[in-house]
Length: 115
Length: 113
Image (tube, rainbow over all chains, first blue to last red; front, top):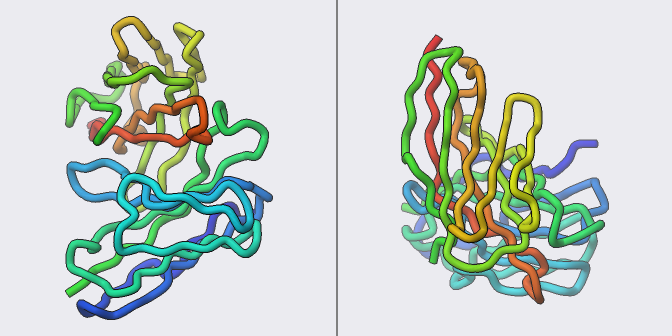
């Protein structure tokens, strides 16, 4: 199993550009989520999904869109990039056995810089 | 707002010594988890402790949970240079939260050979 795969690893955008961060998992996990990691802020939840067609907002959803058309994929879209979105983005999925007592499996992240 | 806060922010020790990291949180939880992050990589799950458990072991790791004080500690015994990483606690809620995890800011552990 590849686990959770994120692409690209690095990206530089200009203010106002749009892009999609890709996330795919091959573990048949129903729960998938996006976090951003900023220095001194830990990880903050952006959006999450509990299955195909079902998404919800996390702690910092503004400026980001998500959709979940398949179990495997959970892309994160930046509609109009801003310098405040410079961050490292992590996708994570969770075993469907129990939401309340199962660990997250993380991808290796996408480092995004917005100039 | 951050649910978990970790202490210390940074810890520097010699190989063979024990490392203790603490995590405090604000609201009732369903479980608390610890993760490790090596530089430039994603987080890796270490251990999960449920709210009705007080202590859990996994290899050289020992986690305690005190729900009355809303705090947890992670002890790494006989540390190795390879343990150098950032360590995060994450609190999991129950109810309708789908078990969403809220992460602390992390402790940077440096183990000197």
